[in-house]
Amino acid sequence: MKSEFKKLRKKKGLKQRALVVARQQLTVLGAKTLSIFQWIVLFVLALIPLVSLYGLRTGEMFFDIVTVIVSITVVLILVLIRDLDLYVWNEKTFSFEIFNNVFKAIGQLPFYPAESIRKGRVRPAENEYRLGT
Image 1: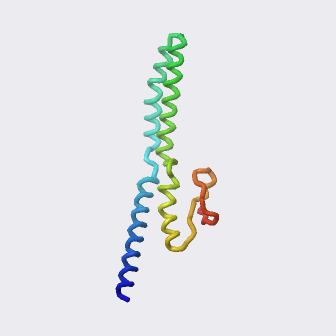
Image 2 (image 1 turned 30 degrees about the horizontal axis):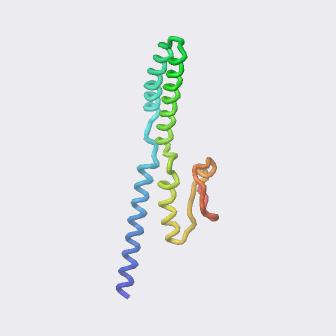
Image 3 (image 1 turned 120 degrees about the vertical axis):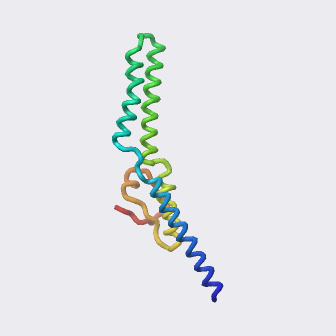
């Protein structure tokens, strides 16, 4: 009887530690990290070389192509930074699967925010799940 109780306490302790780690990961990974001022600085820093390139064009086709390629690259880098800031990539893995594993372990349905499902960032694999507002 005592050995079974010790095993149960150990399992409970492991589940609680896993829950704490999951919460810490969500806190660290879920928050936006760039402020509006930092975004303004990024846009200004991105515009400086673009304006310079467009101002220095000579009209030759090669330089026009290079200018367009550099412009597209800068825009793609800004989009990448935005996605990383919003943490859209792997949102399901870091934000939901950790908690949903805990919910499944205690016999509850998995949970997904309505906004993430509506925007298509998460597609639940389960047929039944809880929906948050």
